Amino acid sequence: ESVVNRIAAGEVVQRPSSVVKELVENSLDAGATSISVVVKDGGLKLIQVSDNGHGIRYEDLPILCERHTTSKLSTFEDLQTIKSMGFRGEALASMTYVGHVTVTTITEGQLHGYRVSYRDGVMEQEPRPCAAVKGTQIMVENLFYNMIARRKNLQNSNDDYPKVVDLISRFAIHYMNVSFSCRKHGANRADVHTVAAFSRLEAIRNVYGVTVARDLLEITVSDDNPACSVFNMDGFVSNANYMAKKTTMVLFINDRLVECTALKRAIEVVYSATLPKASKPFIYMSINLPPEHVDVNIHPTKREVSLLNQESIVDRIQNAIESKLMSSNT
Ligand code: ADP
Ligand code: MG
Image (tube, rainbow, N blue to C red; front, side, top):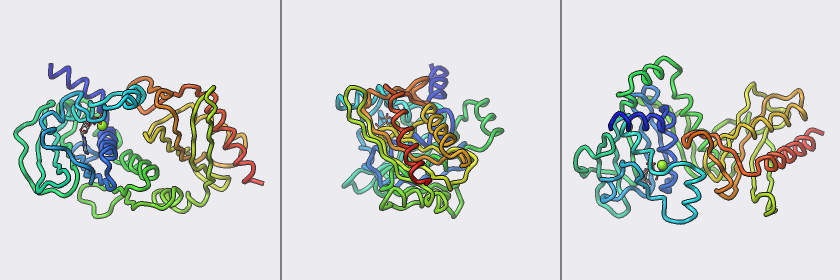
């Protein structure tokens, strides 16, 4: 049974950066306004995510890392979100099958917190009282210690840390009221460090720098025609002065970081048609639409999504970007 569990867990947790993504999403779901990430050896030695969210209650600790444990399943709307955003209650459990997980947490009004370690879905011992500040810290150590081939692959291929930095940068511009930091273990300088921003543009400037932020155009689309689809989009896209060899597309759908290759390609087409001499674009885009209109295809842990009425949505976005580029380029 444990082999089966490990293989299933290895599907959910594919790389160190996928652990970071799950942990940060949990921190955001817990209402954190400050999230810090520390990574050692590209995440193979240590991944630590600390937040100031609402914490985990003592009585929830015994089952915290069992599969299907979730506190996010209470309303009908959540049920639809499950359908659209994939699985629930798998992330922490999976991590305990492929790494050593230690949770330190304190809830509001408590004098001390608790610390407890998990393996293969269960607590290793009773939670021990400990000093703690507000929120939760989750440490994942020795990731893939029991998956030798995976570990070797990751050691030989490029370090996953740049992916982690990229991920936190993306979260930081969307969740602009949350302060993020991301550093390598032992480094005294953080690679991402943000404070709550007053505007989206400021958030983008903080993370990607002035040279990106000064070349952006604001863009919005709202569509409330119930016959096709109810969606709205707002974001920033680069103008003709922006220079880059590669497209950067930061896409959030219903506040979840996802990828939509069809949309990305469609936007690249608009750029090469409208600004033939310009570079590949920078795009930050937040789309909201009914959760049942989002389809996570392939696999729930993949970020790739497709949308109901995708053609008409892509069309509207293409048109909006095209007219924005035309009017700014004259
Ligand atoms: P899911 O997020 O789908 O519920 P997870 O395995 O990621 O499943 O997490 C299981 C549960 O653990 C969550 O539903 C939540 O109740 C709790 N939890 C995990 N991380 C945190 C955190 N940082 N702060 C508070 N609660 C958390
Ligand atoms: Mg989760």
